[in-house]
Length: 636
Ligand code: F6R
Picture 1 (cartoon, rainbow, N blue to C red):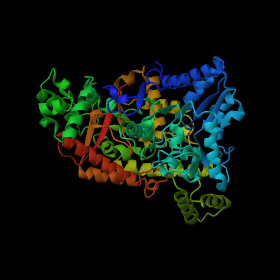
Picture 2: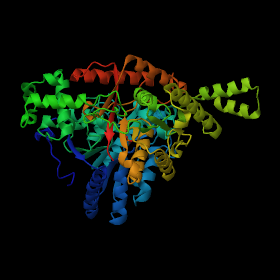
Picture 3: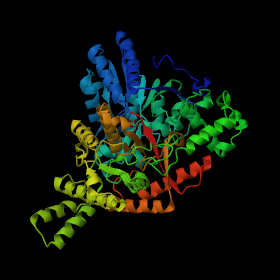
Picture 4: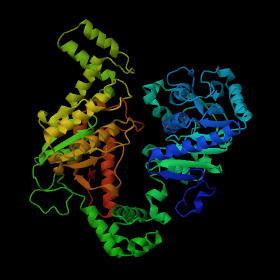
């Protein structure tokens, strides 16, 4: 398949894409997509090279185009495609930084692309981030003129911001905008904080090509990878064009394609509600999903859905082999059977329809917690039940979480030590002076050690409160995390070995882990991938045949009801107990350093979510519980 050959002007003309206003292609594997985008570019360069014609490319930075650049470099090296006749214009640059700043887009382009091909340096145009403010307007006009002088851009590649921006055209940018100086949104700056080691270092302005500049390109390809982009993609593709979602303005271009992977396309109607576009695949998960959706849409509990409800909502195919009555009942039963107050299995009872096995009645359990607090934040109620029901529960804190302890918190303990033991010394003075800047991220290993210890002690207070003995609490301190910066290292064999050694020593019947991939700093993602790799490594060991893995969702996200395999209800008292367990993590309460854009404290978010999922269960027709923690089984 080539992206170009399936270009068509009226995406909504096919029934599958009838909700879509932009030509959109979804790939199972982004590698394949990146290759095809690069191939389209290379074909044009080759064609133009033959005629000695210049190819003008519009380029983007960020994580989205990196794979395309890698493929282009491969084409250059293996197929000897020359870039001598290629002229490039970059979309944007931070302001005010110079092109030799480590985080400038100029450096990014050199490292990821230009240094590896034979492009003529004079043919590279990137907005200059250090133009004098009074000359900016003139400079921007010249940038526009320059693009026109080459006959315009042949292919413009784009990423999309979580807020729907393209280039740095933030929400509100209009169709007539051209290259200019803009202010960056809070969200955009927050998304860049890893690169700049904290949001306060992220520039607040940028120079960017405008929407008009982008839309003047002959061909536009926007790429989006990962779940974090799914909301902005849904809005850009399915809502009417509007300046609140700048990428939606691409709808007016007649040769644009959105190239997506499974995760970024997950909210498009054809994927999330395929029955609406005549694509109902009758597997069990899809049927459950469709019936839950119908119940939520009609605001009727599952058992009250009628044949007419199914017919009027494109779901009549579900009733081909089954009456609506039988279907309602089977989906209702399935949901009801996810509910259990016995997360470790109920001893001496029929477990045919229970989420967990009854045997062994006392299970060995590991709760993996990426940071020291996810255990209680995400599954405090279930944790408490497992302990009180007599299972041998272990908690493994995967990272030290030291980066999230504020300097003032560490200073408190240094001062306490100094005053109580009357121990002033040069060492203490040094620490105090390091900690006096409250905003600075301190790399000093002694400060980081103190921050780790603070989190360890808080965790022990919480696990003791739940009734766990200290010997069952494991602080893994995975090395990938220990950079002293927001940006972490890539995980390696040392991290994997620590995980595997623990699993081998405990031989668990149950593992609980954070299947929460939307954590804004990526630590949860790394931690779960390390667990998946450990499971792969240990799979052949006999004890693993008896090991079931349950994924919980952390503070940022909830499972959709059709994804849930186990739901543990919490009584009002248990909700309060869970809140108290969370409060032991004092360094994380009251203005957590890195909590994303949500201003609520962790306990508030999670309490609200546990309540909301109980309300949703109730609306689907289940009993009215105070709150619920939910899990999805992971098969390996
Ligand atoms: C970068 C740019 C931005 C990014 C967008 C997505 O030159 O103009 O619009 O394309 O912020 O960034 P990533 O790809 O890092 O998710």
